[in-house]
Amino acid sequence: ILVLCYSLHTTHVYQGLNVIFLVLKQHLSLEHNKFTQTHAEDITKKNFLKIYGNTHITVLTVENIKATFQKTGVHPFDPIVVTPAMLASSMPKLIQSNLLT
Image (cartoon, rainbow, N blue to C red; front, side, top):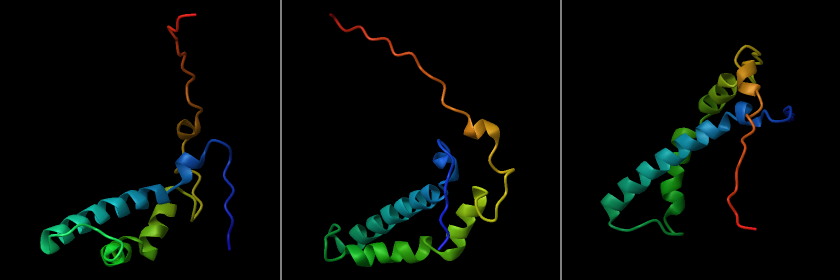
């Protein structure tokens, strides 16, 4: 087991799996639409795994997961992928309130 420890305020840059879960969500939506068109019923507890299973097998492949880590420069390690601008702190914003006191 490899444990990855990220620096403060950098997880948004290094979390490549967020990308793959977005793709998973999109494919699940497509599978849901195909299922409801062919079966004239909605997703239930009884049929969810059948619908999700197709999506899981299609999207969560070893190749796709490895590609997400490579794209973020986590594995294989590539420090050039993440630029200093990507790690810059968010600009503070002044929020003005018009609350009556």
